[in-house]
Length: 379
Image (cartoon, rainbow, N blue to C red):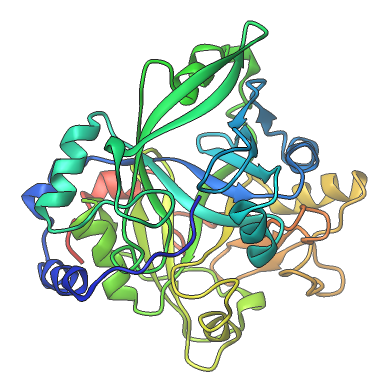
């Protein structure tokens, strides 16, 4: 949850040195991050969570928490967690004038703005980052201070209590333009409080729609992939295929698949020159490293279309692009199918809903494919 920061030439030189290695360094081996949630900037937490529940069956955690209005970093915030069936969405609603409200105006309602990884030992993770010659940053885009401690508030047993956590952000030049947070919770942290107060019967049913991957725009596919493999120490799937997204402009887009560590993929997409997506690289609302969309797997895309029509929602081929006459999804020769919610209905979030083709033909990696094949840490 922070704006882009600028680091010195020393960081760039160090990043180049890291990027030249095809294998993860010992420092990155000790990070062991897992993708825990992604942050979504919204105008109205309640409206967004209500849509996600209505359309996808994703349940909002009852925990109420936020950031005080006198926060010097962004100002006040109202926050909520929504269980996207394996990955959490953290909805962020600025509540007072200041940088947070300005950031929402710049990015727009429903913008996916951050990948949030958790580690088991924050001190070890911080040391690993520094060993690689990378300066950990704070939420405000400045070098991290006070051990990265952030104090939030939460309502517990009807009373307002403190919720503390430690956070570090990768410099934006290192993370190739994506806001990447690495966090750890004190015993009072809101995520631990969230999990301790979440009964199994209250969770989103695991049989329903699930976030399979998040899509990140990459101007230079290999350099971006090396951040995830050589700096974060995550594994890359050898596949290079992916959906041809009509809203991005059809073309020879290149793809890379990174295992987020907790059952969710990160799909890097490098747009073909001259495509609509290539223009997004120059758009201040997007740019290199922008998180473009959530991709949600369902067992039957056509049945899902019928369910949405019954709810008053008409799926599209991408943003406002209509599906072909008589079609309920975009059908690819590989057997993969997909459609999109209109962003006017999804509170600004770009969400693709897809059905995988067979394991032999699909453009997408299967859920456990990397673990079966072993994958690669270098790229």
